[in-house]
Amino acid sequence: MKHMNIAGAFSRMQIKKIKPRENSILISVTDSDESHTSLEGQWKSILRLKFDDIHVKSLNEGKFHLKGMTDNDARKILDFVMKHKECDIYVNCEAGISRSTGIVVALEALFNNKDFSEVYPCHNPFVREKILKQRETIRLEQSK
Image 1 (cartoon, rainbow, N blue to C red):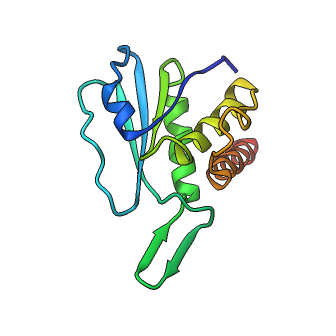
Image 2 (image 1 turned 90 degrees about the vertical axis):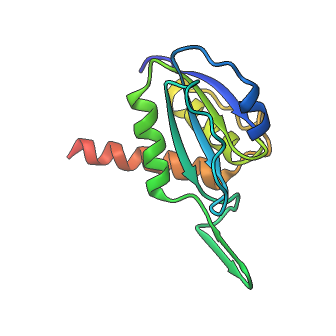
């Protein structure tokens, strides 16, 4: 597989300041109860996902009802990246520390054979593993 240009993980504030090249795509993650930042017009395509920065599927404690990344979210990321594999890939979440870096770590491992877990030590391992496992599921489906 051809090397993919993964630009990195960014916070919501950082991504607003970036002037992407014409062939740049964005994977934008926000909390399940938040709205996405308006970024239309400057990206070739944007994948918008909503899940909270937790390390489990869901968490319901008192008034908190948090939603973790799903298998469907992971599949959407992989499908989006494969559809735009010639593009520069940017990923953002609220702080640019955990969810977005979890996505970047997974994509670097899958498509560039690089271990970025030390580059991003605070990445969300649940997010990383969801993407890696979904890639295996897709491979199994394709081999049938």
